[in-house]
Length: 322
Image (cartoon, rainbow, N blue to C red; front, side, top):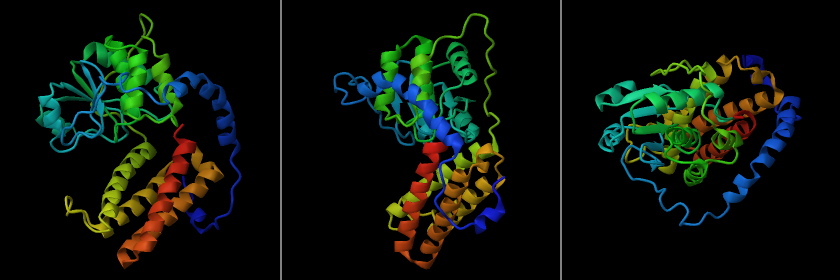
């Protein structure tokens, strides 16, 4: 558990923990193994990816069709569920930690499955769940994470291969088109190294709503709150014209409270890491100053705190999303 006493700590430079240092050194061979991918990601020609284009549909961010039966993108919102039905999609797959909107899917006549993935890669169990999905569930499929850039495209590329609708080269191009980050080499490796499960292998049950640990679920929720804060910032720290229901004071308060509770309630082993605690404390401090700046009308403070929180989150993701 994140220690309350840590809130009183004075920030000071922290040496990188041995766990993270070891993790970094262990990743070097893995990254070298990705060298062909890294080289292939530099300057792809338009002709290579001309058949992989984004489709504009309201409520479906980053909508990309990989093959005849496989689409990927961000979390559907509002009219996005009906738009998927109009595209012929039968099955939705959520690979994010947040719980699926089952009611909205049912209202649009869609079936939902939940297969949460880590940013570090697609585990054997998750890969077999996706392979079972390809074999048994009715397509076409829409496979999504939150923003539709990393985990969703990786899972969709695997399903595409399991269906026999594309090889690794096409899967690789799909990840490039979706802007899947090379900061998550495990996702690229999972797609590169995927092979069908050996004959007789057990396959996990497919469920509509998977059990997700508190920290992962909390971070998924914070990710969505942060998106709302970004909308408010883009509107000069006022309620956005297209989202008048968003209160700057309320949303920054929700962000501060959610961030603190997520760190406070987690039992993750990494909370014992001094580096993690340092990053967490800084993020909490920035979230408090962000709320204070918005509430007091000090938008210079709000902006500097927003940038500080953003950098804290990026630092934590680089170290602990592996």
